[in-house]
Image 1 (cartoon, rainbow, N blue to C red):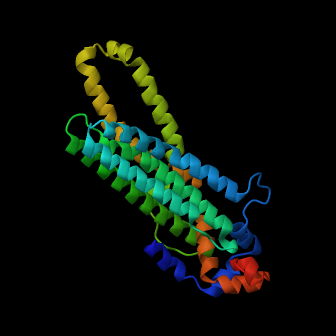
Image 2 (cartoon, rainbow, N blue to C red):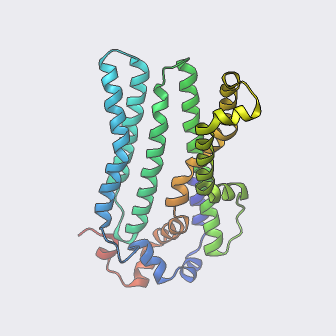
Length: 277
């Protein structure tokens, strides 16, 4: 966020006023006028959906813990899932002034989706099959890679949005842009391909004349390495692909930066704009 804020702070009030129209301000403030449900109700529903999996995992691993099995491994998962629930709750209770209402809701929705995804992989921290240290290390490093990937892709999206909105020329990564754009499509294709192979691998291997028992595990391992790891990285970007609104984020940040100037421009009272008494 520090890097993003540096680029956003370089946008002058003159450029902001010249570029951002009233519709941009109202989008940041209110979003879709024809919403079937209030933002408050949608936030509650999203939170309940988000915490359902980590809460279930806490219960399941706590039951194993009371049985005296895998005490350390289960404790790690419980702590990780509880931290995720706490972080989700923090985003739920974090408040934004009325002029950033829709902006805050979009950030909230995206944050919950990312945390829900990380929660799914946090369960791997408690895997006890094989060497526990290796399993823990693999999943811990995987989660760190996911967080780093989110950070780099989000920074890249923000820079692209700044370039598009304010006609800047900041350097962006084409690789990250392409990876994000193909994430949804490639995941569907990859999942269908892998499922097709799993359901038909016996006759596929028979066609090749290979011994099924000797070859199947090797092929499975190769598929896991060649397709599985890139697939995990691409799947990571699904919340970003569908829920991250870089254009809205940039507009909201700039309006927040010059909040009083934009309030005067739209003739909102301080109470309507900032909330409170």
